Length: 199
Image 1: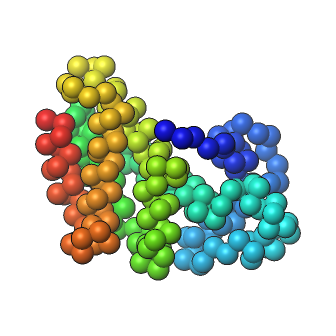
Image 2: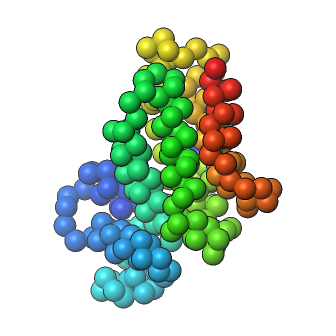
């Protein structure tokens, strides 16, 4: 799979660069706009930060990359919260976490309004193999599934990464099915399909 060089923002968020004014300021300013359901305009954002558009693009990559980082940061926080509240262990705990995360995605008003307003761009950000959202969801699921395999709680003929890829794609299909087939999104059905895959 092709890999792209990390942006200064991605390096800063990963703690690989020194703190100070820079890419993270752009990220937080853009995230405030996102949460306020404002359109993220790169020219306006650069002006607000007192930098050139060229500097902003150098810091964060494209507008889609920046929005992907915002969506992932909020999704990652939701996952962390859910992991604290899920008490079930093993495969059942994984399935519960997965269903609850999908349900949270479906009920995320800001995210769904973004998809409604800019469906082509939004679905590229969410589903592209070169974007941060899908890649990090697959990585996260790979880690959890590998833990289950190592503990002897999950048996599969595929490796953890392949199973994680399938889980994420199933979740995507049922979460955004209204834009794919016109049917209503359904987290519980997605969870049942994933259960069939794992058990």
